[in-house]
Structures are given as C-alpha cells and as structure tokens.
Length: 188
Image (cartoon, rainbow, N blue to C red; front, side):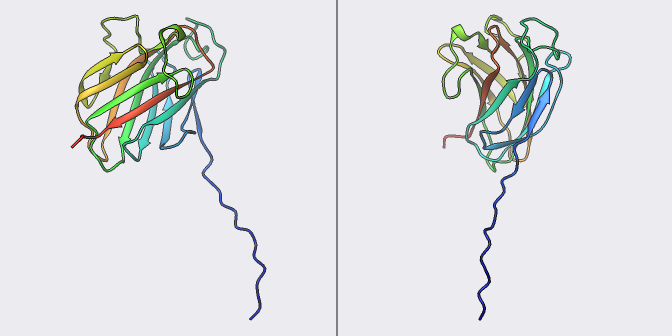
C-alpha cells in the first residue's frame, strides 16, 4: 500500500465583518453573536440601526469605533458627535425565552463606565422619552458605578425579533467603546 504524503489542512474561520453606519463602525469581533446589517446616521429621525442574531442567552459585546473625526455636537454622519440615537434589532436564536434584556456601556472593555467618562444612556435626561422596546413594557437605568439599561416586564420567545431604542450620549467621545448585551432567561 502506498502512503500518500500528508498535506496540512488549513482551517479558515469566517472573516469578521465590520459594518459601517453614520460616523461609526460596528463589529461582532468579540464573538457570541452575529451582526447582519447596520444603517442610519444616528439622529432621532435616522437612528443607527444594528440588526443582530444571538445564538445563546449569554452576554455578548458589540465593539463600536468612530470612523470619522470626533467633533462634539457636529453634524451627525459627518462627525462622531457624542449623540447616538440607536435601535438594536435582536433575533433570539438561543432556543430559550428571554424575560429581560440588559445593555451596559463600557469605555474600556470589561470595566464599568463611570460618571467621569461622559458615556451614558442619556444620563442628564431625568425623564427620557426615547427609550422603548417592542417586547418589554418597562425599563430601569443605573448610572453609578455602571451605565446600564435594563428592559423588563415582557419576553422574547425563541426565533422572535425584538427592537430596542435609546440614546447614547458621550460628552468626552472616544475612538472605541463597547456595548454589552445580556439576554436574561427565567431563573427557575
């Protein structure tokens, strides 16, 4: 029996896709989920819309980078201006119902955002009217020592999509920051 020379087999991972919208790029490079589209410029009338698919009920982190010059209060789409109206559309492909969904902003990966970094879910607005979800009736915001937004009083069944709208403000804009997304399943 003749032995065939063994050639190395190359394994290729799917390349990470970076999605551009407005003055930002959005990446699923940290794993655990997949971005399927991004659009908009980040204004109230044309929010940044990120469409995602989550395959588990574990936290995932969206990496957000500026792609245009930073100019606080500059024209949306032309500058990273510190005001980002967002809509996240999430497909629940985890096989489990989610009974809450939390977002957390981080200026540095794995470190809570604090008051001094200027990054928040519109912390200065005490009565926000721009926070909404298609699947949850209520929300709570926590600001110190974290910047968290928890949607509750609802659920997202498997293979269903939910939308989340909110405003991110960043009064000391950075080139890169993170949005942790944490779907919650029933505890019993």
